[in-house]
Image 1 (cartoon, helix red, strand yellow):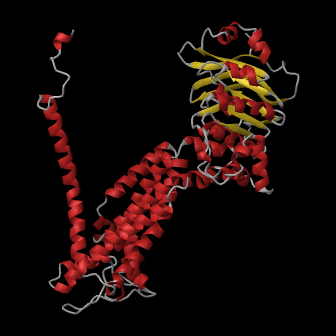
Image 2 (cartoon, rainbow over the protein chains, first blue to last red; image 1 turned 45 degrees about the vertical axis):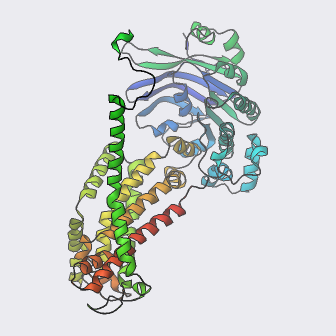
Image 3 (cartoon, helix red, strand yellow; image 1 turned 90 degrees about the vertical axis):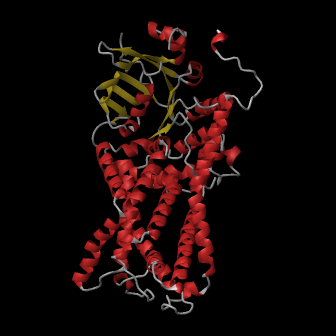
Length: 268
Length: 295
């Protein structure tokens, strides 16, 4: 079984992992991932729970650094820089590679301050009001909140909060947006709105989305990576990349037996 | 199967063993609750009744009278208490809040455990010991340097020692309650650790931190033992150099006057108790009002 998918891409890769192993302490959580994420496309990560897709996603903006026992081996290239080389500043990485989380997590501040937060801390010098309008428009939230920008971000509904979080991520002008199950806490109508938004956003941004929902992966993504989990002799469970291909291929004609079994709902 | 259960009717009977036991226990619980409240209510009523009769505008603007003298007040003690609690706050808040931030946000788990342990020990130290410590450290030093002796500085320092563990603990708990999601959101936007703490975590925890500060102020303004031999007492108004001179405080005034044989001093002690309770109440109301959640 080959896990080397680095040659399957025709378009330019923004994020590239080479032989990435992720450890928590001595526990190998994700092993030997070779994966190229193409520019201005939506890449979906699917797979059963515990297969390490969120862990991998958080490697791309070094958010795993917050976990004390975390350790990465191998290389993660962003354009042509290895993100885990010692001279990289993780704070700057996180501005270029934004993140939207599973649960909507707006700050307990006004809608306006939520959007400008990232811009302020990163020393943005432009017009804040214009930045807020542009970001909220891109996040398809402007029309709903333009008259109440000074109300708390927490006063919005769950779906609106998640779009506010997307606007907040967009406001720092990242190149990549990572989404960690962004719709799992939303109702179907809000989910649909966020999915439409993802379609519009890929014109400007490269998007990587982790999802448990295979219909969602097939609706929003251009390419899909399927991860699985295997148990070692010692009983440790570690995730690995099974197959990475265009979304249509993964869902209609997967090359691996495991992928076929998973997408047809036989396990996971 | 149902044979093993007693045959109870569906209609409520007030005299079955279970119902009776339930009623008795409920009444007992209510009684104990009321008894627990009783000391508080009794104390407040007594202080209000006794203190109110000696209240008057003079109290705020005059110095303590001589025994058997007419009128008089304890404006100097009110100012002295405010001064010393203020000094205590100025010393303990920066150390306490920054220390707690270090605990929750930056330190390793082992370090945090030891510091928390040390704070708990400190909060268990009897207040008289804090007074002896401040006496040794501040009062004796001032005497050696010949710039003072018993002083507001010594009193304020002793109060700071007592306030510090309260502030560290409440801030520590408040910061731990701030959800990890918010921290990750901030870090994910390219914030440094310090930006995350100062702009996201601290503002979210602020109401709880201020509540802790109010607790600490309430504790400190009522402390008598550590002030007895650090700030002593004074019958004069605080002046520009009273940082280094003996200073009056409400708590010590109550202690001195309540045990005196003079009728007018005793009634002033009651009035001072009332003022002390009201001051603590006002502090807590102001802090609640200032940090109420704007939603």
